[in-house]
Image (cartoon, rainbow, N blue to C red; front, side, top):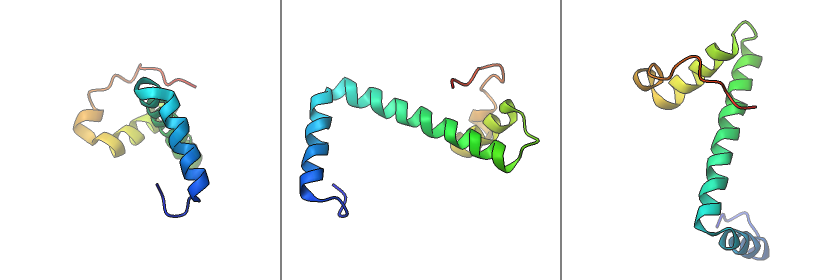
Length: 81
C-alpha cells in the first residue's frame, strides 16, 4: 500500500477489497473510471464553456485514447450522469 497510509488503515483497505471479491473489485474499478471520465468532461466544459457536451467529451476521449481511436466513437453515444 501507499507509504502515506497508516498500517491499520491499509489493513482495513485490503480487508474491504477482499470482501468485494474479484468481480466486485472489477466493478468498482469500472465505476471509478467512469466517474473520472465524467469529471474530466465537466472540467473541460468549465475551462471552455463554449463547448457542447459532445465536443468536451470528444476532447477528453482524444486525450485518453488518441485521435484515431476517439474518431471511431459515435458522437450520439450518450454520457451517463
